[in-house]
Length: 62
Image (cartoon, rainbow, N blue to C red; front, side, top):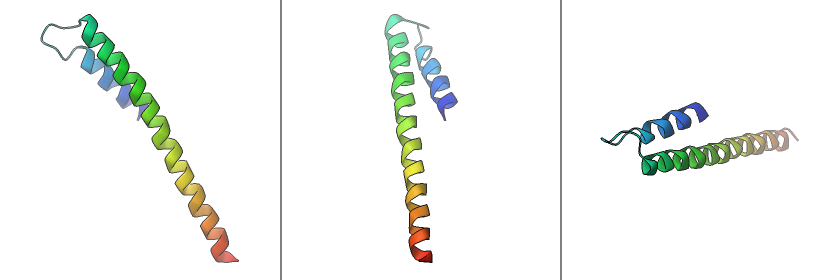
């Protein structure tokens, strides 16, 4: 997931018809940073959901 974020950020840097400009460079860096943060949040959410499932399975066994 993180690799896709980096590739998309680099792609957005060169997406303009002028090539790499300072503005597109900043947009690409922002996309990479926000994508990394959102990927981390999503991964943590998935781990929490699996932990909730694990605890519910233990409760069911009791």
